[in-house]
Amino acid sequence: MLEKSGDANRWKALVFIALAQLMVVLDATIVNIALPSAQVDLGISDGNRQWVVTAYALAFGGLLLFGGRIADLWGRKNAFVVGLIGFAGASALGGAATNEAMMFGARALQGVFGALLAPAALSLLAVMFTDAKERAKAFGIYGAIAGGGGAVGFILGGVLTEYMDWRWTFFVNIPFAIVAALGAYFVIREPEGGRNRNPLDIPGVLLSTLGLVALVYGFTRAESNGWGDSVTVGMFVASAVLLLAFVVTEAKVKAPLLPLRVITDRNRGGVYLSLGIAIIAMFGTFLFLTYYLQIVKGYTPIKTGFAFLPMIVGMMVGSTQIGTRLMTRVPARVLMGPGFLVAAVGMLLMTQLEIGSSYASIILPAMLLLGLGMGTAFMPAMSLATLGVEPRDAGVASAMVNTSQQVGGAIGTALLNTIAASATTSYIADHIGSATSKSQQQLVALQGQVHGYTNAIWFAVGMLVLAAVIVVTFVNAGRPDGTTVVSSEEGAEDEMPVPVVAH
Image (spheres, helix red, strand yellow):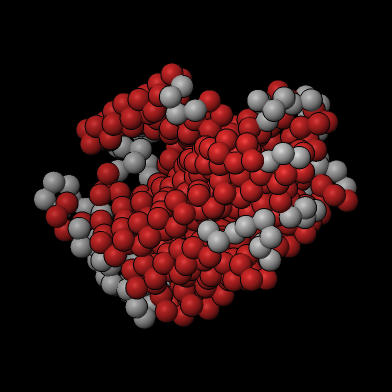
């Protein structure tokens, strides 16, 4: 095993990889705050406005596995630099958009290049940091950025929208991308022999992309048109059929897009599943808190952004102080399980929200606990997801982490929104009769909204507890020190010779 003799430039490389990751994560939330202004300027209808978010999520979530395999094929550094340049170009297009079609197209392009960039970034880390302690530190920094970047997006989105123009929420990506691309080009030296020279699995690419797109679109459509809508149901059925066909294809083809050994390993499978479920809980809650603070509490976009700061602080502490320090000393599940439970306690506090709730008594402690728990759990999850993977599969294993996050985020937003909306509607229907004056009716409407949020947050608490249960049940790897050979691969050795790669 390589001890300290990894790539001499690896820490410098981490700076540029982290910068690129920050840009991608920022982009998921920064646009949410700018959306109302952009909608007015470009004349986007209420029915179509979700496409600004959905176009990005569909392209990103649908193409991630393909992007991960391209990174393994072309070389991660090349994929990373091309992804950054393309992302900058798509951002320029979005900032210069003059109508809704141009905006939706720019967002979809951002998703396409993001899908190339994100897995390349994570797999570069996986192959460059081979020493256990250094790996823990590198993944700690990366995990903190992956988790905290979304909240930074709220602040930056608020500042840019309020003081400049919504277009700057797009233009701001360009300097990030240029600096990261130049830095990566000159600093990153990819380890030899990690490329996957197998031909591309075209049926796998088509089936996985269409299957994931149908899944994400089904959930998005359910949010606006209801679960019983024929297109929504059709999308879910199509997604199930396509993804099942994908698994069958991958088991048969010689050089699969997603070698099943990557996900059938119980540790990795457990990590992907628990991460996806935890993200569903987290993303939905981001949205409710933004609405609660802006609509119910009347916060400005900037104030809303700053209200998320305690969560960033919690995440930084959780991932860099708790996660990194303990990751090489205790098994991953000892960090991940309790981490998700601490986050669940934070969510539990948020179920107590009412119109008159004070920020300091409920939201502040809830955010701190949520950040602390998620930061602690994210850390070992990111590292474990790529641990023990052969170099030729690093891109795809990394893409799976991103896929579970992206798909989880899209599902979370749609699912929790739908739960909240139906709870709000029934609350207002039950209480509006007793409201005689206009002000009382407005109060009932606000109470209905808050009732909807708390109903959905209860659901999120359940999701986090479920994530903790999955971790404790499936994840059985020892300390991620590079010496633990993943146990379930032993069973797979009979069917498929797995070359052991010396680190």
